[in-house]
Amino acid sequence: MSAPTTTDPVARARDAAARESWAEAYELLHDHDRHPERGLTADDLSVLADSAWWSGHVDESVAARLRAHAAYLAADDHRGAGLTSWWLYYEYTGLGRPAAAAGWLHRARHHLEDLPDCPEQCFLAMTAAEEASAAGDHESALAATRRMTALALACGSPDLLALARQAESRVLLAAGRRAEGLALLDEAMCAVSAGELSGMVTGWLYCLALTQCMEAADFARAVEWTNAAMEWCAPPWTGRPPDGNADPGTAPDSEDPSAALTPLPMTVPSGENPFRGVCRAHRVEVLDLLGAWALAEAEARQACREVPVDCLESAAAAYYAAGDVQRRQGRLEAAAVSYGHAHELGRIPQPGLALLRLAQGRADAAVAGVDLALACRSDPDHDVLGRARLLAARTEVALAVRDLPGAAKAAADLAALAGAADGDVPLLRALADTALGSVALAERRPGALLPLRRALAGWLELRVPYEAAQVRMLLAAACRAAGDEEAARLELGTARAVFERLGAVPDARRAAALLGGGSRRRLPGGLTAREAEVLRLVASGGTNKDIAGALVISEHTVARHLNNIFAKLGVGSRTSATAYAYAHDLV
Image (cartoon, rainbow, N blue to C red):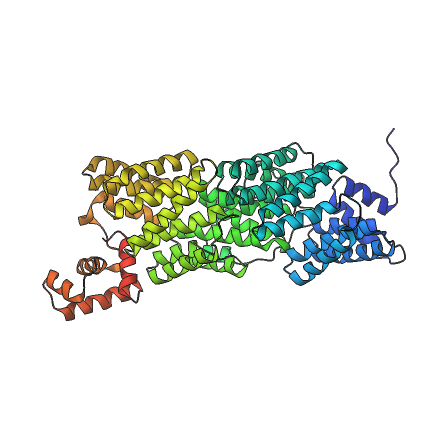
């Protein structure tokens, strides 16, 4: 016979929470709490706070936790009050209220620091590790994570032990001890994949692991854990099959794509997994690299609808990744809108915005944007891939404005970053080889083929098609310079096919033009053949007098051509016109 079911709604809510049926627990406690005479204990208020958060009611979660803290304090329960204070610190941080967060962290320390060792102190140790790591004090950060591990082992909590492993792995990665850090991360994720942890810690670890893998440029792990995270997010909250595919109806809209990515109210429907939007935002970046651009944009749109209000940085990441897709497809206005939304949500939209400005012929803005972003991110400890991408973009922008020394320095810095990594990092190596090869090609050095072939092999191994096709374009130029026209055409043909499959329209046209030869090429920007000649000479550094002599025309005619060129291309300087010429292979 089955056990009788209790009619007490609070007892049923506790049972639902134990089963992590958060929507059920929330409805029961929320209804019960409407009657003040019934009252809830401090523990029940904590359950109400947890279930409200899982159900997408962040404000109610904070309110219930404030009441729980008062109840614990009235009962002289400092462990309960300390843990509740830490959770308030965590929630206020996510809501963008740093002063309130700091106050509750101080209270958590006041309640817990003088107590004998207890599990609740793990959270203080985790916060201490984060603060020390942010200050660059890796030794203190490691000491805090190891205290966390000791406390977790003493109380036998799988949740706390997995969090301790993850925290220590992050500190080790920031300290440059890549192999040790990734090994600890794998150990923490074993507990996740085995289903040994609570839902909250499982969600935390998926989000933290995905961030760590991308920052550490470990693309293989990022792909693996992104797929696993989306499978975990699907059942039982959404009813979707655990294949990580987009929800029905999220295919790109037929109308203006910039409208499809306008900011929407970001609320998590009751009963759904609030981690889903955050994990989906990470998935967008992976899909972008894998070349699944239509799905990446659809997933970005869906992520921006799903991300909770206390995780807006994930929505910013989704907007930024969508902007990268749109930029590469030649949808420059839509890309500008997406980058703008990312900026509104607190993300510096670089280097994507700089590359967008370069495509628009605004070379000065491109140089200034990427240089400022590099200056603001001088410490690469936490985000190696972010700095590597900025250096790769700096190389590209410098080459576009014919700043060969600047390009060479950026490429050398990128190579040093890849070389300094603990062990081989294929994604960093491919970025560095691409930059080194492009600089060697621009300097007309015979050694360009070797790094470019290494770069192509690296991108193909990683299964990153767009970057591989870009390298094929560089290889085609190097082969032509070496007199191997057949090899050049093979590379161009393959690159063109990849660009067309991806929807990278400007690159596909560029490859087609190079395959077809200059005589049949349709000039960009509505330029006439004479204006293209003038622009080529401007890009080569010629003055009006030099150009007039070369084309046997008057300087007044040169000036008139330049005015027409500036107007057609929407640029205001010779530097910007030069950048446009290089970006569109007119030189």
